[in-house]
Image 1 (tube, rainbow, N blue to C red):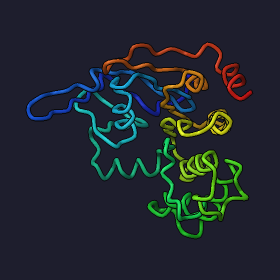
Image 2: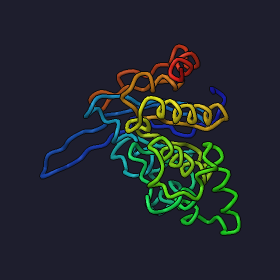
Image 3: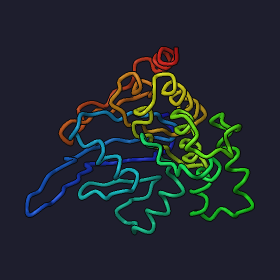
Image 4: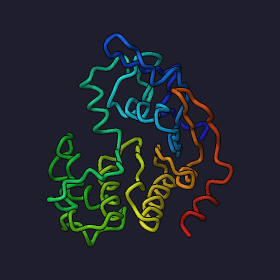
Length: 242
């Protein structure tokens, strides 16, 4: 992907928290690039800074030092309103706890990002149906998500992340609440999306899940401990899916 455009470029990224005069450094100078079509895993022990990093990359928080460019735009120069617009249009989220509204149907959950965008009502139905079809749950489209299995809920969450055709998907421990079979199915969907050109950033503590990616960034104490390619990601994926 060396000729692909940069989606994310961070240089010397820092994040300090100040509480009662005490400064805690969560990130202490992190630098890397994620290009269009990459599949990158972020790993690290508790307190390593990975949660802080993902919050900054997905515009849920701001950094306090260094630079962060998203699709070539310096985020330091953007207002909170600008960042909220980018977050809605360009970023898809998949969470460990699904974050679905269980009294709503699959269709209604997937439609939510479109309600807060500039997509006209007349165009929403096809976009929602296409996203749910992409995760293979057409038969559950009008079923309340409270009635779905854990794996099905996560697949609907992926459909919701896809519906706005984002530039990047962040998947934060997407298999953490699933059994191994459901987890394999979810990872298979993310893998398929990446093979079709979607940029995916996966946050996980599971090595076998992380090895779906082409590259693993490991954090420790707010710094990058290693940033290495996965030696054979396709073989790792096949082993996981057995």
